[in-house]
Length: 292
Image 1 (spheres, rainbow, N blue to C red):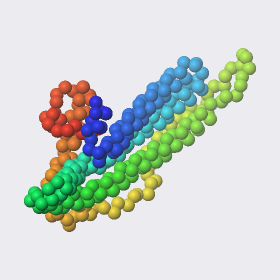
Image 2 (cartoon, rainbow, N blue to C red; image 1 turned 120 degrees about the horizontal axis):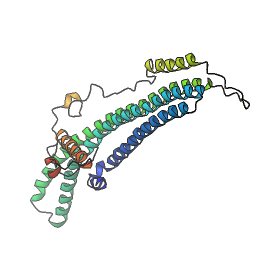
Image 3 (spheres, one colour; image 1 turned 90 degrees about the vertical axis):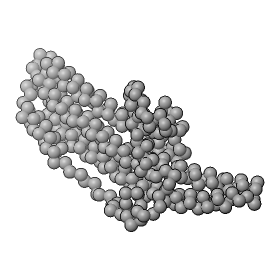
Image 4 (cartoon, helix red, strand yellow; image 1 turned 180 degrees about the vertical axis):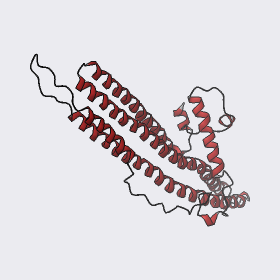
């Protein structure tokens, strides 16, 4: 079903549609990896307890806590990637809404060329040329809006994406370093048959490791340098510089209206993918757009 939707996308938005769709699969993989890692952390603790070795039991229990927190960072990372993906959707929606304006202009140009070849004296040429002037004016606005949205949102999306990578890495480093402190507390000195194991005497230090890990996460602050956005405060609601709101908008299909339709179709398709049988009126009347 999703492949059919991809085929129905305007040519202009197909590549970004595919990228966003693939990102969704990647995000799901990160979420699944986090869940599996949580399970592994629990199983590690349970195994340690079953060894009847107090040192192994103590260390594995606390190591499981740290590894579970590492897994939690995967889930947070996936959420941040979803935020980044949501920003890219704004570009895709704009591409989707600009496509009819491009197509309308190209269609008129084709009609003019055909008519000039077949009926060069036709009075319809004047009408078509006037219509082309209007279409070109609308196209200029639409293309400017597309450029503005694309540059701003592309920058914003990967600002969020790369900051998420750094946050995940730095927090997992904090946890991994404390985990290594914990592992070092386990005395692995060999014993001979009949010799008793040395009792675990570092319980307080093991608890301190967890406290330090918790404190490290609590006091973590972003280390990335903020990315400068030159468009900040300069774009109006119609994706044009603030002082050009009066510029004529594309009458064929305004951006805001088209974007709303794309988003409504997305919601309808998401329900369909989830097995919901209630059809959306919008989904029934319009061309199917990209699923989230």
